[in-house]
Amino acid sequence: MDRSLSKTGLVNWLMLLVGGITVLVFAQRSASATGELAAAFLGVAVLTALAAWFQMGLAGREEAERLELEDLSRSRSDSGLFAASAAEVAPARRAREQFERWVVPIFTLLLFVGESYGVWYFWKRLERPDDMFAKPAPAALSLAIFAAVSFVLFLLGRYSARLAQLEASALLRPSGSAILLGALVSGIAAVASGLDWAGFGRWDRYIALGMTALLALVALETLFGLVFEIYRPRVQGRVGRLLYESRIVGLLGQSGGLFNTAAQALDYQFGFKVSDTWFYRYLEQSLSGFALVWVAILWVSSCIVVLEATVANSGEACLMRVSL
View (cartoon, rainbow, N blue to C red):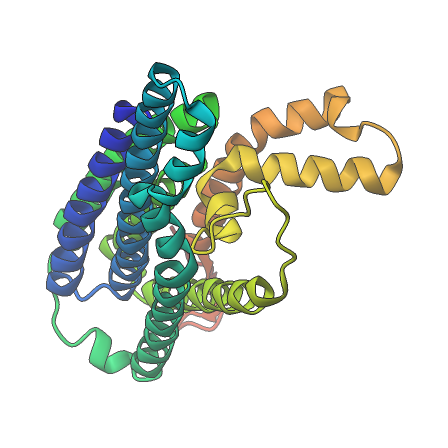
């Protein structure tokens, strides 16, 4: 395991920890339900990145141990006998195997319990919206903080995801996807704070309900992963997918992964390379612009209010008032 990959995993965990604490503090100060949901997602990302970084350390020690044993075996004449005994005295390899066999499933189970509790907690709080918004606070400051956290996490997440792809590192991929998801939920919290600042405070609860449903979906995926892991066939030499790595988080955190999945589904459905057509490539490149234009049109249309005609006191003139 390359040391740079392990350092990147550690930096991802630290940045997620700092970002999660920052989002939680300002979400509570501004009474933002979406901000608190974003902090919950960041908490899940912190735990995932921590587990991935610790497993990267175990894999690194196992690789160093393997190289050391190979050097020792080449320097000995009785290499066959030494190789047989070396296979029995490999503490780093045994530690990694025990970690994957016992710690990872227990950790994933606790992660599912935490996600389920988060769904129940926020659902109960969102049933009483008056309790969520009891304390007014400046939304502009929260908007700036959430946007800054989203920007920093996005830059680091793009670097980590690209590095994991280039190095084919399965252990760096979960933290890269998690930090990109942290950037996404922080951006959503910034949008909710912006709507609150513009006078559309009720949208904070609606967005929080949607994020609660997303958290429930991630919890279900974690549960299904635990169940399927019990019946997954073990093939010698074949490395399975990390149990705590979420495919939903990977799809949401990396837009390229979402487009690749959609392209594969369309290619399979139509029987030819739909993803190679000019229209699909144009749609993939311009989808974000279309989404921004649609949001702008929706916001402008909500600013126009047409009042019914009213009769003046004289009974002859009618007044049509259109307020923008």
